[in-house]
Length: 316
Image (cartoon, rainbow, N blue to C red; front, side, top):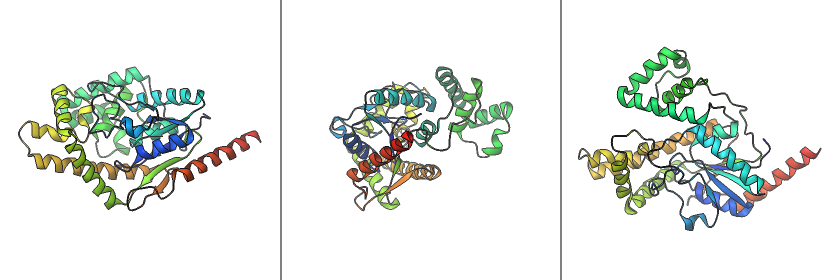
């Protein structure tokens, strides 16, 4: 692959969307969202979906493309993203991958190989149904029957990983999803916003408060009523699932807010851990007021310079 792309990652609430928009305006680009939940229509507040004002005219893709009862897999994301990268590039513009779902971005950049998307999605739903009926024990037993060696590298059972692996096995694939490279297959930097941890946590807490003031409870209640009794990915999102016990009268309001903040902080910590494993990521240190130390103009100049030098090497 020779397409030029720019990737912007980072923990939740670190300012990825704003930096992505600024770089897109500077480079003449369009954004492909790498977020597992912003694909869902009507889920705007809890997913921190970018508004029209925040987008500043920059075109965004892979947002609002699914109903909340639909699934969305890493294989689908990769297929859609590759199609949009080709389309945006063909129009002389620059694709920017912006989001915090590390698995999605890594799978795209490193060229993970997946079975046919439609069949995989169907299998994914079937194994989700197994989990709903039998719990984690059912998934573990199924994997022990199909590929007991799986647990040599995954000694601690994880629901999401097991469902993904069993789905791949069900459609004849290898759960160890092969990849083309351990380095990005596209030409362009992979940036990651890197805020100081305590400031990031404070920002997360404040943003949750803002979401609640903006109507998160009503949005979560709509999702609860829409997905009640149905196992859906959308209903598993942080900021939504914590409300279910409250709606059912088994949890207080204050405890619900506390759990959303706690779970979001934990998610941000997991995101940072994931980013550390992606050795080609370039951390962007942030200031005390959660702004990148380096300006957008500096980053854009760096990107253009690298592409220019790369073009020169290709000509040689």
